[in-house]
Picture 1 (cartoon, one colour):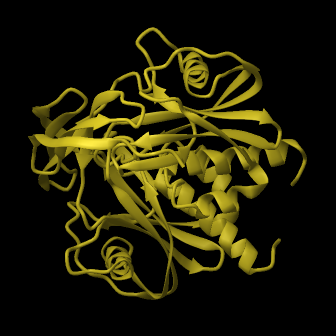
Picture 2 (tube, chains in turn purple, yellow; picture 1 turned 180 degrees about the horizontal axis):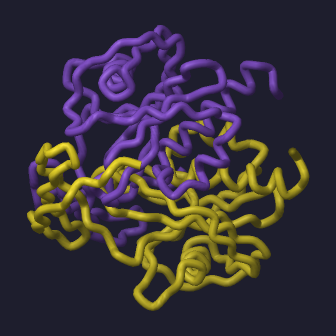
Picture 3 (cartoon, rainbow over the protein chains, first blue to last red; picture 1 turned 90 degrees about the horizontal axis):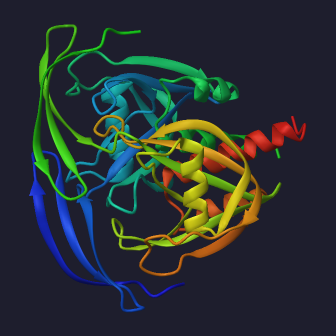
Length: 185
Length: 185
């Protein structure tokens, strides 16, 4: 494993309601000095749930995505609150966005989105044993819930409304895991 | 498909060397008005290459990731330049980061990282028919190239140094595609 660069200095260069940008002075182990910028995100991290309504069917949501100004079909996700653990956060987000809680929650993997310039970490949680339960969320309009068969992920990923990398990675992971569990390979 | 919200106003609220934050005033089709923030990224987008040195082996890179302050094992990627098309950009990034060019380049999919609050789009390009060719990059230290068998993706994704969602999604996609091409299913 290579030797990490030394962080000489960290300075906040911009701060808005949602974002905080840091400038870093780094010196690599070979002596080369550089300045990078990175986004500082919530220290509690985020959570993404994979709600399986049965062994073959996942519940997706279709939600307006302001960054790309269109509706995106993806898995439910959100920030972890200060007083929550990862699994509770996944359960709460599902109740708010999908209208279900889960009897069994399994942490699968921590995913980064842009590790080169953001500290964001999203925990992928498999949710099974679903039961109906809705909590009020902060969404400006009702979220559409779309059941999708894991056997038809190819069709899903061909759609222009399904582009979000964390959701795609999580769906492949869960498909793999459930196939293994079923003795599929 | 739901009716998109109307964007009433867009204002730049922060600008640094790398990042630009916009505040958006939106009105949803049900009349609810909200203010969101989003990151504005390069309008040319980014590219991620999946360099296959043979039908079973992909070339990964181990590179320092400032956002998480550790080395990350992932696929080569970078921004598309103003005068480049997507496939040329993928080829250039490979030459800079991996030391190979590709005879055959295939665009597979556009991935977003955080469509809710960033416009970033990364084009996944399968690269085959590799030949040795190195271009100078702007990296502060040499990048380590790590060959990895597609049959061992599970082991890769269990490693704490492999977390980047776009790379994980792209590797699953390519594994699927090559299995289909080989008549594996």
